[in-house]
Image (cartoon, rainbow, N blue to C red; front, side, top):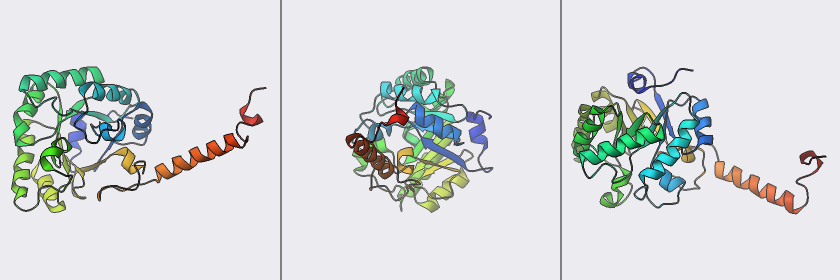
Length: 264
């Protein structure tokens, strides 16, 4: 089982579709890795999924490092990417380098991901220049939710040219891949054909070089509401809830534990 590296990930463009999922702990990381997923993103979506925050904005560097350290311990093959959270790279180039370096060094991840296009070009270049691989992220950028006002499709109409410029800037800065989130299919296809680095889509149609989903969405763990682009492959919440109900019923009825589950 050959370890996937940053150069190996980049070289997959045009050869085979890349697969990426989030994971936030050791147990799920082991499962995702053994299933053959190419890259695991420890996303700042950990804030919504695991920590109960209403957005990704409150997530801290320490929280990201904590969860990523656990994920890294469970991974043998997949490329592990850590999200740089809100305000960890926005103040200055020096701040971005200091925090990016700390996150790679302390977490064990092999690359960072950060949001933003042209406005973050210098930040991306500065990180790449000190040997920190960067995955870009444009389109719907959840850290900008207060500016955007809602989670909606980006790049429609006149906005398309701006996203194309953002994509080119991220590539020129030295990023090895770029996430396109909630982008019209045709625009994502155009950007994918224009860039030499892989595009990873989430709500960006089937023409990207790869796809990423939040694992808990894929497993149906977050309830009935889900974005249009999410396909749940399991009714996980329903299955788990039913299992817990069965356990509680058996305990109350004196069925569990019986002799099979007792020591003699």
